Amino acid sequence: MYLYIFLIYVLVSLYFKWLLSWGGAERIEGWLAGFLINLQSTGWDTEQIRFYALLSWIAWTVFCVVLLLAS
Image 1 (cartoon, rainbow, N blue to C red):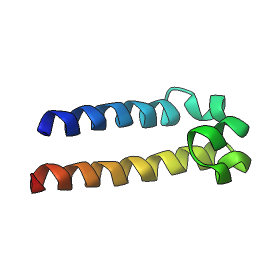
Image 2 (cartoon, helix red, strand yellow):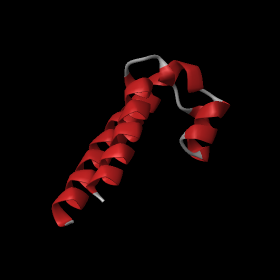
Image 3 (cartoon, one colour):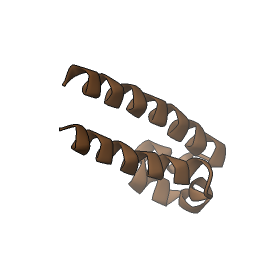
Image 4 (cartoon, rainbow, N blue to C red):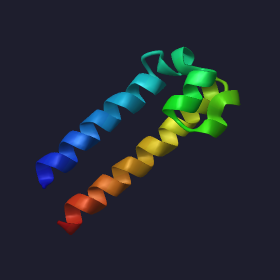
């Protein structure tokens, strides 16, 4: 169980790191953001996508820590 939680967290973290630091937000700006994030994000600019990624990464971190502590 711990390994699966850790692996999922690593994959999600790589995705959010790509969005925040490695140019992912610029690459998915527009209709692709609607496909990879949600349908409401098609009008978001790069900074809004990065802000979403930062908040989501924090939420995923808290969620995974709670899962690891509960199991």
